[in-house]
Image (cartoon, rainbow, N blue to C red):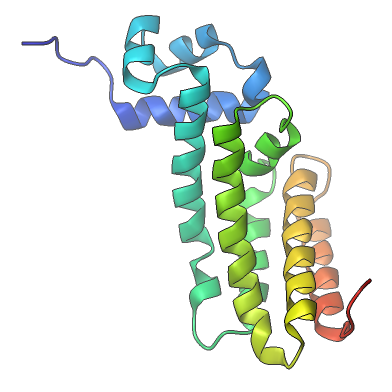
Length: 190
């Protein structure tokens, strides 16, 4: 019979998330993670694998949680109103803290490929959700895809600027300006 675990997996995962969020992947050490999770090195490796594996686990959980945050993009009827609600929730939720996926993308040359894949999967889901809500506006498929890309880039910009660079009112104005541009711009950009 094995020893009883002295830690809770979800609590440890939340503590690891905080470390990666505060310091990024590269600057977070195994010592930081063992201290934050209150786990010894052997237990940490046994439960999560190495630092890269733990980071991927953190991103998977974060992605599942964030998908719940943008569930309104699946509401019917599809349309710009859903996207407006998404950006309102986004600005409210990220102000001051940013987005773990955006932080991961900023370290894309050093994070594991599995982590990049996790971020890319969620971004693809989000882009499809934007496109779904834009497709009923009478625009061509190409215009819809460009607008979905623009909204995804706007979201990444807002999450980056939310880390103490811009005030909430400024982030709201960025979102409103982007939505205005999406609604009135009707031609393909070459």
